[in-house]
Amino acid sequence: MAVDGAAIAPDDLIELGRIISAYGVRGWVKIQPHSAQGIVLRAAPVWWLAAPVAPQAKPAVLVAHKVKQVRPQGSTIVADLDGVGERDLAESLRGYTVFVSRLHFPKAQTDEFYWVDLVGCQVFGEPGLLGFVNEVVDNGAHALLKVHRLQEQAAGLPLALLDAKGKPQEMLVPFVAAHVQHVDIVARRIDTDWPLDF
Image 1 (tube, one colour):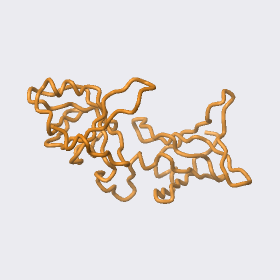
Image 2 (spheres, one colour; image 1 turned 90 degrees about the horizontal axis):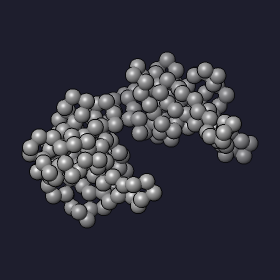
Image 3 (cartoon, helix red, strand yellow; image 1 turned 90 degrees about the vertical axis):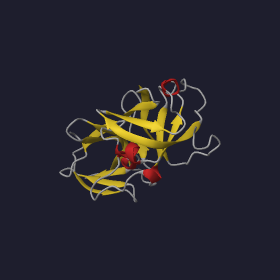
């Protein structure tokens, strides 16, 4: 069973993966994590699961499950969740989204950052404010910050820069020490020397 079907989900839940199938005959589930390591999924004592919903549908109800056992399985993660215990029930969870409270994230090492913490940070460079991090993507060699461009206005409020089609202008900034000089998660600021015209 779930930890408590009536439990209120915390406000700091982060989506970390999706259940892709049942695993084995004892009711374990197989999860495709959104990051290569899945470290947080393996460390969290409780997962919040949400059923898949159709576009435009109401948000899914989140149900908490204690994690009894968890381990990596190739590029996926397999887990024994409290209250699942049967293969048919595990298979019925296919497509469910897995969320974890930010409180359960292991402390990042010095000069290491969770991608979720970078999203929303303002990026500053040579001309001043360049934009904000909309997404972090992996190109295989390193992470890239997808920055939506902003332009500072005289009144102090930044204005989104749009392309000819009315979509936000973007730039990709390599998230490597050679081009990112400083990251301040508390101040939500990233300083870079990456050229605008690259």
